[in-house]
Image 1 (cartoon, protein in one colour):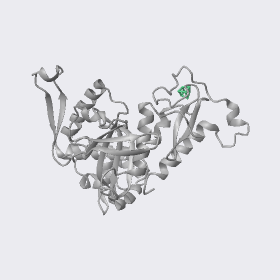
Image 2 (cartoon, helix red, strand yellow; image 1 turned 60 degrees about the vertical axis):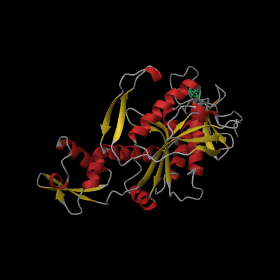
Image 3 (tube, protein in one colour; image 1 turned 60 degrees about the horizontal axis):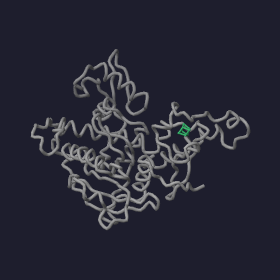
Length: 352
Ligand code: SF4
């Protein structure tokens, strides 16, 4: 059934953006072959979380990344798989000093062994390791998109600061704002005080079509970044100093890889993991573009992930009969919703 309710919440808009990206990326350079992409949402660093992330990937590299399994490799695992030698060697001889105690490296080696992504053996009481495959260079570009369907003045101010932070840090190769298309001759967002480096995409969530209103500039991901820690609060007349610190290239490269690994694991359909598909009011409804979005029968629309929790006053567990009395799909609708999204997520992770 197609949901007649317009997807008007920021969350619903974000899901539509993710689906549009999956179908139509890249928005510039028609016909430009970007290779496969991975789309994820709500990821970033401790200080800055992006709404939508697009990884433009090297096709061969992505196939090779798939050998390491669908789960992310955290920094400890990356240290092991990226430095494991071709031939058997004592791990302390083979790996560079991690900058933290070796016992954590040993734990990571055991985890890598359990996942089957590195080989280990014992020589007396020494652990030797050997790599199974080289860890590939699979990420070509990382693009961050902020979703702001309806941008009022105060939201624009906050967004302006966030984008300035992104531009100064240069963690993503490009930053964009996606906003709802209006009927105005000039899109109102273009009158806002946003950094000129950020691109603007106007999206019609109903028809799932979009166009570029402002072209982005590539950011200097290979240069050291500047992290804005604190800025004057008093507007343009406030002459107090901003506080910032430099972030070196290696730290940025490590952060980019960590973000990419998490994006690879999570995708953007994992929203159901933080929602309550086991609530009797939870449904998945179809939207144009062959997309399933959550729908709350009690609220009569697309609920947010934050609202759809055990603390929701209207939460009611799905009746046990849905699970036991001839429900056509094993496990009842809650489990079925989860499974459906999980299947789509897996199919959309190229290289799997
Ligand atoms: S009633 Fe609450 S918990 Fe149930 S689907 Fe709606 S938002 Fe989610």
